[in-house]
Length: 455
Figure (cartoon, rainbow, N blue to C red):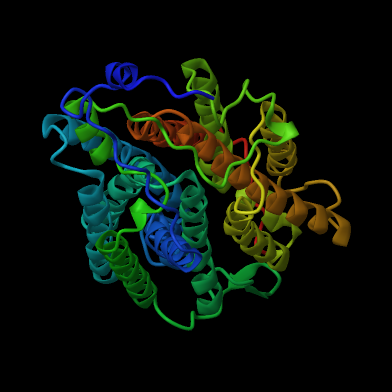
C-alpha cells in the first residue's frame, strides 16, 4: 500500500507532551516464579480463619472444664458474628485515611493480631470470672474481628494480581480449615467415648493439651505472616498486569490505559453465553447476581452447615463423623486447586455447580433435621451416603465460590476489580452471618435439632 504523506502522518499523531504514552504491559512471570508466588499466596491465606476453626475443634475438650458446658458453642457462634464489625471498621478506616491505610497494612495487622491473640488464648482459656469464661470470649471476639476482616481485606489485596492467583488464595484458606482438624485428630480431641455400664461416657485424655494446640496454631500464623512479608518483598504482583497505583498515575497524567486480558484466558465455544459473559462483562447486574450467589453459598455452606454437622453425622457413629469432617475439610482446598485446571465461566456451568452443591447440602440438612434417628441408621449404606454428602457439599461449594470470585474480578480496570472483590468479601460475611443466625435459632432457641446420645 502507498504510504501517506509525511505531513498527514504528523497531523494525525499528537506530540508526547499532548498525550503521554502508557508503558508496555509487563511480561508474564517465569513459570517457577509464578509457582512460588502461588505457594506464598496460599501460605499467607491459610491464616484466614485457622484460629477460629481451631477454637471450635477444641470444644470437646474445653466444655469439660468450663462452666457453660455444651452451651459454649452457641455463645461462641454469636460472638463470631459480632466480628462482622471488623470489615466495616476497615473500610471506614481506609476511607477516612484516604488510602493511607492500605490492604497490605491490613493483612499485616490481621496476621499479627491473630498470632498474639492465640498466644494469649493458650494461657487464659481455662480462666473464669464470676462463673463465665469471659477471657476466652474476649479473645474469641478479637479473633473474630480479624478473621471477618480477612474475608474482605485478602480479596481486596488480591486485585493487584492476575485473576489466576485467586485460586491459590482459596486453596490456602481451605488448608487453613484442614490443619486444625488434623491437629485435633492427632491430639485425640472428641474421640469415641468408652461407655461405663452402657450409659456413662468416659473419654480418653488428649495426647497434648489445649494450650499446646493453640501454641501450634500461633506458629502457623507466624509462618503465614512470614510468607506475606516475602510476597510483598518480591515483585510478584508485576507478573501479568500493572498494579492499581500505576494505573492511577497514568490516569492523572492523561494517558489512556487499556485493561490487559489475563494471558491464561482463551475463548472457547463454551464461553460464548456467559451472564452473558461473567468473565468479560463489567455489567453491574451480572456481577450483582454473582454476589447474590456468593451470599447464598456462604449462608448455607459457611454459616449453617457447620452448626448441623454433629447432628447429621454423629448418629452414624464417631468413626463416620470424623471421616466426614476430615474428607469435607480436605475437599475444600482440593476443589479450589482444581480451578487451576478448569474453571466454570458460563452462567450455565456456574448455576449447575451451585445446584449440585445445594442438592448435597439439602441431603445433609435433612439428616440433621431427622436426628437422632436419620434414615439408614443401621448398616454401612447410610454412613457412606452421609460422608459422600458432606464431601460433595464442601467441594462443590468451595469450587463454585472460587470460580465466582475469579469471574467477579475479571474485566475492566484494576480499580473496578478491587471494588468488586471487596463487595465479594462483604457478601461472603453477610451470607455467613445469616446462616449462623439460622443455625443458632434452630439448635438453641427453637430446639429443632436433637443430639444423639453418646452411649
